[in-house]
Length: 582
Image 1 (cartoon, helix red, strand yellow):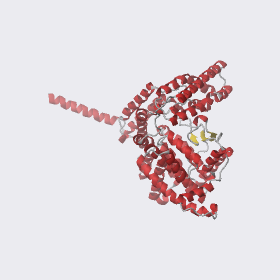
Image 2 (cartoon, one colour):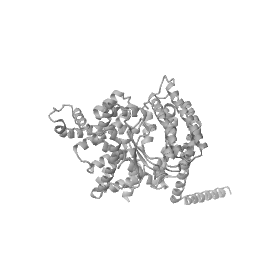
Image 3 (cartoon, one colour):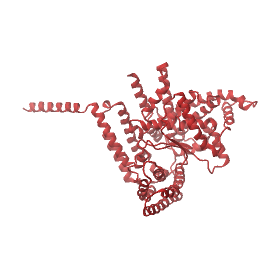
Image 4 (cartoon, rainbow, N blue to C red):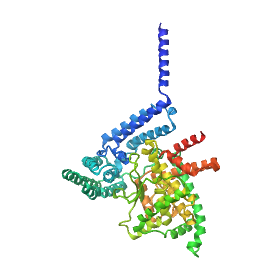
Protein backbone atom coordinates (compact mmCIF):
# COMPACT_ATOMS: atom_id res chain seq x y z
CA UNK A 1 0.00 0.00 0.00
CA UNK A 2 2.76 2.39 1.00
CA UNK A 3 4.63 1.59 -2.20
CA UNK A 4 1.50 2.26 -4.30
CA UNK A 5 0.99 5.69 -2.70
CA UNK A 6 4.61 6.61 -3.42
CA UNK A 7 4.20 5.49 -7.03
CA UNK A 8 1.00 7.51 -7.45
CA UNK A 9 2.65 10.59 -5.93
CA UNK A 10 5.59 10.18 -8.30
CA UNK A 11 3.27 10.00 -11.31
CA UNK A 12 1.31 13.03 -10.12
CA UNK A 13 4.51 15.04 -9.68
CA UNK A 14 5.84 13.91 -13.06
CA UNK A 15 2.57 14.84 -14.77
CA UNK A 16 2.55 18.22 -13.00
CA UNK A 17 6.10 18.97 -14.11
CA UNK A 18 5.28 18.00 -17.68
CA UNK A 19 2.20 20.22 -17.64
CA UNK A 20 4.27 23.10 -16.24
CA UNK A 21 6.89 22.68 -18.95
CA UNK A 22 4.17 22.55 -21.61
CA UNK A 23 2.41 25.57 -20.11
CA UNK A 24 5.45 27.83 -20.26
CA UNK A 25 6.76 27.66 -23.81
CA UNK A 26 9.56 29.95 -25.02
CA UNK A 27 6.88 32.03 -26.76
CA UNK A 28 4.92 32.40 -23.54
CA UNK A 29 8.06 33.10 -21.54
CA UNK A 30 9.05 35.92 -23.89
CA UNK A 31 5.55 37.36 -23.65
CA UNK A 32 5.76 37.12 -19.86
CA UNK A 33 9.16 38.81 -19.92
CA UNK A 34 7.78 41.65 -22.05
CA UNK A 35 5.07 42.16 -19.42
CA UNK A 36 7.68 41.98 -16.67
CA UNK A 37 9.81 44.64 -18.39
CA UNK A 38 6.81 46.95 -18.72
CA UNK A 39 5.98 46.62 -15.02
CA UNK A 40 9.65 46.92 -14.09
CA UNK A 41 10.04 50.22 -15.95
CA UNK A 42 6.87 51.63 -14.36
CA UNK A 43 8.24 50.77 -10.91
CA UNK A 44 11.64 52.14 -11.87
CA UNK A 45 10.15 55.52 -12.74
CA UNK A 46 8.29 55.69 -9.44
CA UNK A 47 11.65 55.27 -7.73
CA UNK A 48 13.55 57.64 -10.06
CA UNK A 49 11.13 60.36 -11.30
CA UNK A 50 13.89 62.70 -12.52
CA UNK A 51 15.41 59.91 -14.60
CA UNK A 52 11.90 59.26 -15.94
CA UNK A 53 11.54 62.91 -16.97
CA UNK A 54 14.90 62.78 -18.76
CA UNK A 55 13.52 59.89 -20.80
CA UNK A 56 10.37 61.82 -21.69
CA UNK A 57 8.07 60.19 -19.11
CA UNK A 58 6.40 63.16 -17.38
CA UNK A 59 3.68 61.62 -15.20
CA UNK A 60 5.83 62.14 -12.10
CA UNK A 61 7.16 65.62 -12.83
CA UNK A 62 5.66 67.02 -9.64
CA UNK A 63 7.75 64.65 -7.49
CA UNK A 64 11.15 65.65 -6.09
CA UNK A 65 12.87 62.74 -4.37
CA UNK A 66 14.48 63.48 -1.01
CA UNK A 67 17.62 61.34 -0.99
CA UNK A 68 17.77 60.20 2.62
CA UNK A 69 18.49 56.83 4.27
CA UNK A 70 14.87 55.73 3.81
CA UNK A 71 15.14 56.37 0.08
CA UNK A 72 18.41 54.43 -0.17
CA UNK A 73 16.73 51.47 1.54
CA UNK A 74 13.93 51.65 -1.02
CA UNK A 75 16.52 51.53 -3.80
CA UNK A 76 18.27 48.51 -2.31
CA UNK A 77 15.00 46.66 -1.67
CA UNK A 78 13.96 47.34 -5.26
CA UNK A 79 17.27 46.05 -6.66
CA UNK A 80 17.28 42.85 -4.59
CA UNK A 81 13.62 42.10 -5.32
CA UNK A 82 14.07 42.42 -9.08
CA UNK A 83 17.29 40.42 -9.12
CA UNK A 84 15.20 37.64 -7.58
CA UNK A 85 12.43 38.17 -10.15
CA UNK A 86 14.86 37.78 -13.05
CA UNK A 87 15.47 34.18 -11.97
CA UNK A 88 11.98 33.35 -13.26
CA UNK A 89 13.17 33.83 -16.85
CA UNK A 90 15.69 31.17 -17.99
CA UNK A 91 18.00 32.68 -20.59
CA UNK A 92 17.84 29.59 -22.81
CA UNK A 93 14.16 30.29 -23.55
CA UNK A 94 14.42 34.04 -24.16
CA UNK A 95 14.75 35.69 -27.57
CA UNK A 96 18.05 37.32 -28.52
CA UNK A 97 16.79 40.84 -27.83
CA UNK A 98 15.30 39.80 -24.52
CA UNK A 99 18.55 38.16 -23.46
CA UNK A 100 20.30 41.52 -23.91
CA UNK A 101 17.51 43.26 -22.01
CA UNK A 102 17.85 40.68 -19.23
CA UNK A 103 21.57 41.37 -18.90
CA UNK A 104 21.09 45.13 -19.01
CA UNK A 105 18.42 45.06 -16.30
CA UNK A 106 20.59 42.77 -14.19
CA UNK A 107 23.60 45.03 -14.62
CA UNK A 108 21.60 48.12 -13.68
CA UNK A 109 20.34 46.48 -10.49
CA UNK A 110 23.82 45.33 -9.51
CA UNK A 111 25.13 48.81 -10.24
CA UNK A 112 22.55 50.34 -7.89
CA UNK A 113 23.70 48.09 -5.08
CA UNK A 114 27.36 48.86 -5.80
CA UNK A 115 26.79 52.62 -5.92
CA UNK A 116 24.96 52.64 -2.58
CA UNK A 117 26.91 50.05 -0.60
CA UNK A 118 30.44 50.43 -1.95
CA UNK A 119 30.96 53.61 -3.95
CA UNK A 120 28.88 55.73 -1.53
CA UNK A 121 29.31 58.91 -3.57
CA UNK A 122 26.25 60.36 -1.84
CA UNK A 123 28.61 60.92 1.12
CA UNK A 124 31.52 62.55 -0.72
CA UNK A 125 30.07 64.21 -3.83
CA UNK A 126 27.99 67.29 -2.88
CA UNK A 127 27.46 68.02 -6.60
CA UNK A 128 24.99 65.10 -6.70
CA UNK A 129 22.57 67.44 -4.96
CA UNK A 130 21.29 70.10 -7.36
CA UNK A 131 17.61 70.74 -8.11
CA UNK A 132 18.12 73.25 -10.91
CA UNK A 133 18.35 70.79 -13.80
CA UNK A 134 15.04 69.07 -13.00
CA UNK A 135 13.19 72.37 -12.71
CA UNK A 136 14.85 73.84 -15.81
CA UNK A 137 13.63 70.91 -17.89
CA UNK A 138 10.07 71.56 -16.75
CA UNK A 139 10.31 75.20 -17.85
CA UNK A 140 12.03 74.41 -21.16
CA UNK A 141 9.99 71.33 -22.08
CA UNK A 142 7.64 71.27 -25.05
CA UNK A 143 5.78 68.15 -23.96
CA UNK A 144 2.77 69.82 -22.29
CA UNK A 145 0.94 73.10 -21.85
CA UNK A 146 2.99 75.71 -19.97
CA UNK A 147 0.40 76.05 -17.20
CA UNK A 148 0.41 72.28 -16.61
CA UNK A 149 4.20 72.33 -16.38
CA UNK A 150 4.18 75.32 -14.04
CA UNK A 151 1.64 73.57 -11.82
CA UNK A 152 4.02 70.60 -11.53
CA UNK A 153 6.88 73.04 -10.94
CA UNK A 154 4.86 74.55 -8.08
CA UNK A 155 4.17 71.23 -6.36
CA UNK A 156 7.73 69.99 -6.89
CA UNK A 157 9.15 73.03 -5.09
CA UNK A 158 7.51 71.92 -1.83
CA UNK A 159 10.28 69.35 -1.27
CA UNK A 160 13.28 71.60 -1.98
CA UNK A 161 14.06 72.56 1.66
CA UNK A 162 13.87 68.90 2.75
CA UNK A 163 15.97 67.91 -0.29
CA UNK A 164 18.88 70.09 0.79
CA UNK A 165 18.52 69.18 4.46
CA UNK A 166 18.88 65.51 3.47
CA UNK A 167 21.93 66.42 1.39
CA UNK A 168 23.61 68.03 4.40
CA UNK A 169 22.80 64.97 6.52
CA UNK A 170 24.29 62.60 3.91
CA UNK A 171 27.57 64.41 3.31
CA UNK A 172 30.38 63.09 5.50
CA UNK A 173 33.83 63.78 4.08
CA UNK A 174 33.40 65.37 0.66
CA UNK A 175 36.24 65.81 -1.78
CA UNK A 176 37.38 69.39 -2.20
CA UNK A 177 36.91 69.13 -5.96
CA UNK A 178 33.28 68.00 -5.82
CA UNK A 179 32.53 70.56 -3.13
CA UNK A 180 33.75 73.40 -5.36
CA UNK A 181 31.71 72.04 -8.28
CA UNK A 182 28.57 71.77 -6.13
CA UNK A 183 28.87 75.39 -5.02
CA UNK A 184 29.45 76.65 -8.58
CA UNK A 185 26.68 74.64 -10.25
CA UNK A 186 24.06 75.24 -7.55
CA UNK A 187 24.65 78.99 -7.57
CA UNK A 188 24.64 78.93 -11.38
CA UNK A 189 21.23 77.26 -11.29
CA UNK A 190 19.55 79.98 -9.22
CA UNK A 191 18.57 81.75 -12.45
CA UNK A 192 16.07 78.93 -13.06
CA UNK A 193 14.04 80.16 -10.06
CA UNK A 194 14.50 83.83 -10.83
CA UNK A 195 14.95 85.06 -14.41
CA UNK A 196 13.77 81.88 -16.18
CA UNK A 197 10.74 81.39 -13.95
CA UNK A 198 9.72 85.06 -14.18
CA UNK A 199 9.81 84.81 -17.99
CA UNK A 200 7.63 81.67 -17.91
CA UNK A 201 5.11 83.21 -15.50
CA UNK A 202 4.78 86.23 -17.79
CA UNK A 203 3.55 83.90 -20.56
CA UNK A 204 1.34 81.85 -18.25
CA UNK A 205 -2.45 81.97 -17.90
CA UNK A 206 -2.38 80.74 -14.29
CA UNK A 207 -4.39 82.67 -11.73
CA UNK A 208 -2.69 85.56 -9.97
CA UNK A 209 -3.02 83.65 -6.71
CA UNK A 210 -1.07 80.65 -8.01
CA UNK A 211 1.53 82.90 -9.62
CA UNK A 212 2.02 84.61 -6.28
CA UNK A 213 2.33 81.22 -4.57
CA UNK A 214 4.93 80.09 -7.12
CA UNK A 215 6.97 83.26 -6.66
CA UNK A 216 6.94 82.79 -2.90
CA UNK A 217 8.10 79.18 -3.11
CA UNK A 218 10.78 80.18 -5.62
CA UNK A 219 12.24 82.60 -3.07
CA UNK A 220 12.27 79.77 -0.52
CA UNK A 221 14.02 77.55 -3.09
CA UNK A 222 16.69 80.16 -3.78
CA UNK A 223 17.24 80.58 -0.06
CA UNK A 224 17.63 76.79 0.37
CA UNK A 225 20.24 76.73 -2.40
CA UNK A 226 22.17 79.63 -0.88
CA UNK A 227 22.03 78.07 2.60
CA UNK A 228 23.36 74.79 1.15
CA UNK A 229 26.23 76.44 -0.72
CA UNK A 230 27.13 78.54 2.32
CA UNK A 231 27.08 75.38 4.43
CA UNK A 232 29.51 73.77 1.97
CA UNK A 233 31.77 76.83 2.06
CA UNK A 234 31.85 76.79 5.87
CA UNK A 235 32.15 73.00 6.21
CA UNK A 236 34.84 72.01 8.69
CA UNK A 237 36.38 69.35 6.47
CA UNK A 238 39.84 68.71 7.88
CA UNK A 239 40.18 65.26 6.28
CA UNK A 240 38.58 65.47 2.83
CA UNK A 241 38.25 62.23 0.93
CA UNK A 242 40.56 61.84 -2.05
CA UNK A 243 38.84 62.07 -5.42
CA UNK A 244 40.85 58.99 -6.49
CA UNK A 245 38.86 55.74 -6.42
CA UNK A 246 41.69 53.26 -5.97
CA UNK A 247 42.26 50.05 -7.95
CA UNK A 248 39.53 47.89 -6.41
CA UNK A 249 36.65 50.37 -6.68
CA UNK A 250 37.79 51.49 -10.12
CA UNK A 251 37.90 47.94 -11.52
CA UNK A 252 34.42 47.15 -10.19
CA UNK A 253 32.95 50.42 -11.44
CA UNK A 254 34.59 49.88 -14.85
CA UNK A 255 33.00 46.43 -15.22
CA UNK A 256 29.52 47.70 -14.27
CA UNK A 257 29.61 51.01 -16.14
CA UNK A 258 31.37 49.89 -19.33
CA UNK A 259 30.17 46.26 -19.70
CA UNK A 260 33.03 45.49 -22.04
CA UNK A 261 34.55 42.17 -22.98
CA UNK A 262 37.82 43.79 -21.84
CA UNK A 263 38.97 44.50 -18.29
CA UNK A 264 40.18 47.91 -17.11
CA UNK A 265 43.76 46.60 -17.04
CA UNK A 266 43.54 45.35 -20.63
CA UNK A 267 42.10 48.63 -21.93
CA UNK A 268 44.91 50.55 -20.24
CA UNK A 269 47.54 48.37 -21.93
CA UNK A 270 45.81 48.68 -25.32
CA UNK A 271 45.67 52.46 -24.94
CA UNK A 272 49.39 52.68 -24.16
CA UNK A 273 50.19 50.62 -27.28
CA UNK A 274 47.81 52.69 -29.42
CA UNK A 275 49.43 55.92 -28.27
CA UNK A 276 52.78 54.66 -29.55
CA UNK A 277 51.24 53.72 -32.92
CA UNK A 278 49.61 57.15 -33.27
CA UNK A 279 52.89 58.91 -32.55
CA UNK A 280 54.49 57.02 -35.43
CA UNK A 281 51.74 58.00 -37.90
CA UNK A 282 51.78 61.61 -36.73
CA UNK A 283 55.52 61.93 -37.17
CA UNK A 284 55.30 60.72 -40.76
CA UNK A 285 52.63 63.35 -41.56
CA UNK A 286 54.29 66.18 -39.62
CA UNK A 287 57.61 65.48 -41.30
CA UNK A 288 55.91 65.75 -44.71
CA UNK A 289 54.17 69.02 -43.72
CA UNK A 290 57.30 70.59 -42.22
CA UNK A 291 58.43 72.52 -45.34
CA UNK A 292 54.93 73.93 -45.89
CA UNK A 293 54.52 75.35 -42.40
CA UNK A 294 58.01 75.66 -40.94
CA UNK A 295 59.87 76.67 -44.11
CA UNK A 296 63.62 76.57 -43.50
CA UNK A 297 63.38 76.16 -39.71
CA UNK A 298 65.76 73.34 -38.67
CA UNK A 299 63.97 70.17 -37.64
CA UNK A 300 64.34 69.20 -33.97
CA UNK A 301 65.87 65.81 -33.19
CA UNK A 302 62.97 64.96 -30.85
CA UNK A 303 60.11 63.47 -32.92
CA UNK A 304 57.39 64.56 -30.48
CA UNK A 305 58.74 68.10 -30.53
CA UNK A 306 58.64 68.11 -34.34
CA UNK A 307 55.00 66.96 -34.29
CA UNK A 308 54.12 69.61 -31.71
CA UNK A 309 55.70 72.43 -33.70
CA UNK A 310 53.71 71.56 -36.83
CA UNK A 311 50.48 71.13 -34.85
CA UNK A 312 51.02 74.46 -33.09
CA UNK A 313 51.41 76.19 -36.45
CA UNK A 314 48.28 74.62 -37.96
CA UNK A 315 46.31 75.35 -34.76
CA UNK A 316 46.60 79.08 -35.39
CA UNK A 317 43.83 78.62 -37.94
CA UNK A 318 40.70 79.03 -35.80
CA UNK A 319 37.50 81.02 -35.33
CA UNK A 320 36.85 83.73 -32.71
CA UNK A 321 35.08 83.45 -29.31
CA UNK A 322 32.14 85.45 -30.67
CA UNK A 323 31.74 83.20 -33.74
CA UNK A 324 32.40 79.85 -32.03
CA UNK A 325 28.74 78.84 -31.71
CA UNK A 326 27.71 80.19 -35.13
CA UNK A 327 30.57 78.27 -36.76
CA UNK A 328 29.23 75.06 -35.23
CA UNK A 329 25.72 75.90 -36.45
CA UNK A 330 27.07 76.40 -39.98
CA UNK A 331 28.88 73.05 -40.07
CA UNK A 332 25.95 70.83 -39.01
CA UNK A 333 24.07 70.95 -42.37
CA UNK A 334 27.37 70.49 -44.22
CA UNK A 335 28.04 67.26 -42.33
CA UNK A 336 24.49 66.05 -42.93
CA UNK A 337 24.81 66.68 -46.67
CA UNK A 338 28.13 64.80 -46.81
CA UNK A 339 26.74 61.72 -45.02
CA UNK A 340 23.80 61.67 -47.43
CA UNK A 341 26.02 62.14 -50.50
CA UNK A 342 28.34 59.29 -49.49
CA UNK A 343 25.39 57.08 -48.45
CA UNK A 344 27.01 56.27 -45.11
CA UNK A 345 23.74 55.87 -43.19
CA UNK A 346 20.21 57.24 -43.11
CA UNK A 347 19.64 60.40 -41.04
CA UNK A 348 16.04 61.25 -40.20
CA UNK A 349 15.50 64.85 -41.41
CA UNK A 350 12.46 65.29 -39.14
CA UNK A 351 14.50 65.13 -35.93
CA UNK A 352 15.65 68.63 -34.94
CA UNK A 353 19.11 69.48 -33.62
CA UNK A 354 19.33 72.81 -31.79
CA UNK A 355 22.71 74.35 -31.02
CA UNK A 356 22.55 76.37 -27.79
CA UNK A 357 24.79 77.96 -25.20
CA UNK A 358 25.50 75.48 -22.41
CA UNK A 359 23.06 76.17 -19.51
CA UNK A 360 24.70 77.50 -16.33
CA UNK A 361 23.60 74.51 -14.24
CA UNK A 362 25.51 72.19 -16.62
CA UNK A 363 28.71 74.20 -16.79
CA UNK A 364 32.03 73.13 -15.32
CA UNK A 365 32.69 69.62 -16.64
CA UNK A 366 32.72 69.42 -20.45
CA UNK A 367 32.99 72.01 -23.23
CA UNK A 368 30.42 70.45 -25.57
CA UNK A 369 27.70 67.86 -25.11
CA UNK A 370 24.43 66.53 -26.48
CA UNK A 371 21.13 66.53 -24.58
CA UNK A 372 18.74 64.24 -26.42
CA UNK A 373 15.04 63.51 -25.82
CA UNK A 374 14.17 60.18 -24.30
CA UNK A 375 12.07 57.39 -25.85
CA UNK A 376 8.81 58.86 -24.47
CA UNK A 377 9.54 62.29 -25.88
CA UNK A 378 10.89 61.46 -29.31
CA UNK A 379 9.67 64.62 -31.00
CA UNK A 380 11.38 67.00 -28.58
CA UNK A 381 14.49 68.93 -29.53
CA UNK A 382 17.97 67.46 -29.34
CA UNK A 383 20.30 70.11 -27.93
CA UNK A 384 23.96 70.57 -28.80
CA UNK A 385 25.28 72.37 -25.70
CA UNK A 386 28.24 74.63 -26.48
CA UNK A 387 30.39 75.96 -23.65
CA UNK A 388 30.76 79.74 -23.48
CA UNK A 389 34.04 81.64 -23.25
CA UNK A 390 32.28 84.55 -21.59
CA UNK A 391 34.41 86.01 -18.81
CA UNK A 392 37.56 84.23 -19.98
CA UNK A 393 40.83 86.07 -20.41
CA UNK A 394 42.09 86.61 -23.95
CA UNK A 395 44.92 84.16 -23.25
CA UNK A 396 42.58 81.40 -22.05
CA UNK A 397 40.21 81.91 -24.99
CA UNK A 398 43.08 81.77 -27.47
CA UNK A 399 44.37 78.54 -25.92
CA UNK A 400 40.89 76.99 -26.13
CA UNK A 401 40.39 78.05 -29.75
CA UNK A 402 43.78 76.68 -30.78
CA UNK A 403 42.66 73.37 -29.32
CA UNK A 404 39.36 73.58 -31.24
CA UNK A 405 40.95 74.93 -34.40
CA UNK A 406 39.37 74.86 -37.87
CA UNK A 407 40.20 71.16 -38.31
CA UNK A 408 39.45 69.88 -34.81
CA UNK A 409 36.15 71.77 -34.64
CA UNK A 410 34.89 69.75 -37.60
CA UNK A 411 35.90 66.51 -35.89
CA UNK A 412 34.20 67.67 -32.68
CA UNK A 413 30.99 68.24 -34.64
CA UNK A 414 31.26 64.80 -36.23
CA UNK A 415 31.63 63.34 -32.72
CA UNK A 416 28.89 65.29 -30.98
CA UNK A 417 26.42 65.70 -33.82
CA UNK A 418 26.57 64.04 -37.25
CA UNK A 419 26.98 61.14 -37.60
CA UNK A 420 28.04 60.78 -33.94
CA UNK A 421 26.00 61.23 -30.76
CA UNK A 422 23.02 63.01 -32.25
CA UNK A 423 22.53 60.42 -34.99
CA UNK A 424 23.08 57.44 -32.70
CA UNK A 425 20.64 58.73 -30.09
CA UNK A 426 17.94 59.22 -32.73
CA UNK A 427 18.37 55.57 -33.73
CA UNK A 428 18.41 54.52 -30.08
CA UNK A 429 15.01 56.11 -29.48
CA UNK A 430 13.64 54.15 -32.45
CA UNK A 431 14.78 50.85 -30.98
CA UNK A 432 11.88 48.52 -30.16
CA UNK A 433 13.50 47.87 -26.78
CA UNK A 434 12.69 50.47 -24.14
CA UNK A 435 15.29 48.85 -21.87
CA UNK A 436 18.10 49.52 -24.34
CA UNK A 437 16.95 53.11 -24.75
CA UNK A 438 16.82 53.94 -21.05
CA UNK A 439 19.85 51.89 -19.92
CA UNK A 440 22.02 53.16 -22.78
CA UNK A 441 25.55 51.80 -22.55
CA UNK A 442 28.05 54.65 -22.27
CA UNK A 443 30.90 52.81 -23.97
CA UNK A 444 28.75 52.00 -27.00
CA UNK A 445 27.42 55.57 -27.18
CA UNK A 446 30.85 57.20 -26.84
CA UNK A 447 32.54 54.50 -28.87
CA UNK A 448 30.19 55.10 -31.78
CA UNK A 449 30.94 58.84 -31.74
CA UNK A 450 34.70 58.16 -31.77
CA UNK A 451 34.32 55.50 -34.47
CA UNK A 452 32.47 57.93 -36.76
CA UNK A 453 35.38 60.37 -36.67
CA UNK A 454 37.67 57.82 -38.29
CA UNK A 455 34.95 56.47 -40.56
CA UNK A 456 34.22 59.95 -41.97
CA UNK A 457 37.88 60.59 -42.77
CA UNK A 458 38.25 57.12 -44.29
CA UNK A 459 35.33 57.96 -46.60
CA UNK A 460 37.23 61.02 -47.86
CA UNK A 461 35.85 63.84 -45.71
CA UNK A 462 38.07 66.95 -46.09
CA UNK A 463 40.92 64.64 -47.08
CA UNK A 464 44.30 66.31 -46.47
CA UNK A 465 47.49 65.67 -44.53
CA UNK A 466 46.47 68.45 -42.11
CA UNK A 467 43.08 66.89 -41.42
CA UNK A 468 44.58 63.45 -40.83
CA UNK A 469 47.27 64.87 -38.54
CA UNK A 470 44.63 66.69 -36.52
CA UNK A 471 42.42 63.60 -36.49
CA UNK A 472 45.28 61.56 -35.04
CA UNK A 473 45.80 64.29 -32.46
CA UNK A 474 42.08 64.12 -31.62
CA UNK A 475 42.17 60.32 -31.48
CA UNK A 476 45.20 60.62 -29.23
CA UNK A 477 42.94 62.52 -26.84
CA UNK A 478 40.54 59.56 -26.69
CA UNK A 479 43.48 57.23 -26.14
CA UNK A 480 45.02 59.41 -23.45
CA UNK A 481 41.63 59.80 -21.78
CA UNK A 482 41.80 56.10 -20.96
CA UNK A 483 45.44 56.31 -19.87
CA UNK A 484 44.74 59.37 -17.72
CA UNK A 485 41.60 57.97 -16.11
CA UNK A 486 43.21 54.67 -15.17
CA UNK A 487 46.49 56.23 -14.06
CA UNK A 488 44.93 58.94 -11.88
CA UNK A 489 42.46 56.67 -10.12
CA UNK A 490 44.60 53.54 -9.72
CA UNK A 491 48.25 54.61 -10.04
CA UNK A 492 48.20 57.96 -8.18
CA UNK A 493 49.27 59.96 -11.23
CA UNK A 494 50.06 63.52 -10.12
CA UNK A 495 48.85 66.69 -11.81
CA UNK A 496 52.35 67.37 -13.15
CA UNK A 497 52.51 63.89 -14.67
CA UNK A 498 49.03 64.33 -16.14
CA UNK A 499 49.96 67.69 -17.65
CA UNK A 500 53.06 66.16 -19.23
CA UNK A 501 50.98 63.35 -20.76
CA UNK A 502 48.32 65.70 -22.09
CA UNK A 503 50.50 68.57 -23.30
CA UNK A 504 53.74 66.85 -24.36
CA UNK A 505 52.43 63.46 -25.51
CA UNK A 506 48.85 64.30 -26.54
CA UNK A 507 49.73 67.79 -27.85
CA UNK A 508 46.85 69.50 -26.04
CA UNK A 509 46.70 73.19 -25.25
CA UNK A 510 47.15 74.25 -21.62
CA UNK A 511 43.47 75.23 -21.21
CA UNK A 512 42.27 71.88 -22.56
CA UNK A 513 44.71 69.94 -20.38
CA UNK A 514 43.63 71.88 -17.29
CA UNK A 515 40.01 71.13 -18.13
CA UNK A 516 40.75 67.43 -18.53
CA UNK A 517 42.57 67.35 -15.18
CA UNK A 518 39.51 68.93 -13.58
CA UNK A 519 37.26 66.39 -15.29
CA UNK A 520 39.25 63.38 -14.10
CA UNK A 521 39.04 64.83 -10.59
CA UNK A 522 35.25 64.90 -10.86
CA UNK A 523 34.49 61.68 -12.76
CA UNK A 524 35.66 58.09 -12.77
CA UNK A 525 35.68 55.45 -15.57
CA UNK A 526 33.64 57.59 -17.99
CA UNK A 527 36.82 58.92 -19.64
CA UNK A 528 37.75 55.32 -20.49
CA UNK A 529 34.45 54.65 -22.25
CA UNK A 530 35.49 56.43 -25.47
CA UNK A 531 38.53 54.31 -26.23
CA UNK A 532 36.91 51.08 -25.04
CA UNK A 533 33.80 51.42 -27.19
CA UNK A 534 35.74 52.68 -30.21
CA UNK A 535 38.17 49.77 -30.06
CA UNK A 536 35.37 47.20 -29.87
CA UNK A 537 33.33 48.75 -32.73
CA UNK A 538 36.24 49.33 -35.10
CA UNK A 539 37.70 45.86 -34.53
CA UNK A 540 34.28 44.30 -35.13
CA UNK A 541 33.81 46.21 -38.39
CA UNK A 542 37.26 45.25 -39.64
CA UNK A 543 36.59 41.61 -38.80
CA UNK A 544 33.36 41.66 -40.86
CA UNK A 545 35.07 43.43 -43.78
CA UNK A 546 37.73 40.74 -43.83
CA UNK A 547 35.18 37.91 -43.65
CA UNK A 548 32.67 39.33 -46.16
CA UNK A 549 35.09 40.86 -48.64
CA UNK A 550 33.39 42.60 -51.59
CA UNK A 551 29.90 41.89 -50.21
CA UNK A 552 30.47 44.04 -47.13
CA UNK A 553 28.16 47.08 -47.15
CA UNK A 554 29.17 49.95 -44.87
CA UNK A 555 25.74 51.60 -44.74
CA UNK A 556 24.05 48.30 -43.88
CA UNK A 557 26.62 47.68 -41.16
CA UNK A 558 25.99 51.10 -39.61
CA UNK A 559 22.22 50.89 -39.70
CA UNK A 560 22.11 47.32 -38.42
CA UNK A 561 24.56 48.12 -35.63
CA UNK A 562 22.54 51.15 -34.53
CA UNK A 563 19.21 49.31 -34.78
CA UNK A 564 19.95 47.41 -31.57
CA UNK A 565 19.85 50.61 -29.54
CA UNK A 566 22.44 51.67 -27.00
CA UNK A 567 23.35 48.15 -25.92
CA UNK A 568 26.87 47.03 -24.93
CA UNK A 569 28.98 46.39 -28.03
CA UNK A 570 29.71 42.80 -27.02
CA UNK A 571 25.99 41.96 -27.14
CA UNK A 572 25.37 43.78 -30.44
CA UNK A 573 28.29 41.91 -31.96
CA UNK A 574 26.92 38.60 -30.70
CA UNK A 575 23.47 39.25 -32.22
CA UNK A 576 24.79 40.52 -35.55
CA UNK A 577 27.08 37.52 -35.96
CA UNK A 578 24.22 35.18 -35.07
CA UNK A 579 22.01 36.80 -37.72
CA UNK A 580 24.76 36.69 -40.34
CA UNK A 581 25.23 32.96 -39.77
CA UNK A 582 21.52 32.37 -40.39
